[in-house]
Length: 149
Image (tube, rainbow, N blue to C red; front, side, top):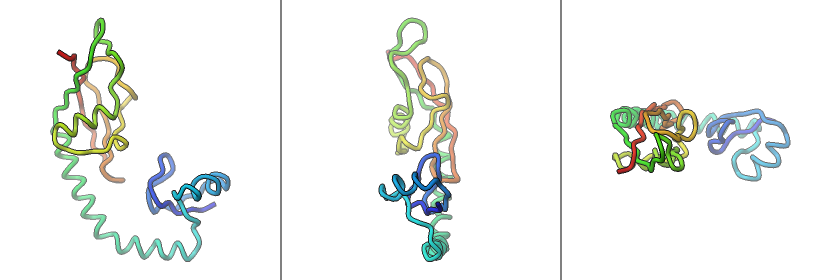
């Protein structure tokens, strides 16, 4: 079944992509939830026209995302957390904590666009995270988990 995505769907595609999925997934989940519409020939023509009109706006969005990526890469993020014996944390540091640290540094990024390399962080040290600012722009940032004083 061919569908046109109306919004980003994780592990499937981005908004306005034409994707092929199994019939049940499309019919029972994507279409009723409003994530997609059927890719008929008329819908494809409307999509093509919309994409032409949006190309100029898209270039500006990519340019803004690249500027924000260079700003974010310059940050030295330190996230403080409670520490037990050795360097083991009470709890963990995840994408929400990185989003809060970025907000304190001056850049507002939604936590769902941040992916911490290796999942949750449970020890002190330096770690990496990928921030998706646009479908083509991903900024890799380094943050450090330090002991709370």
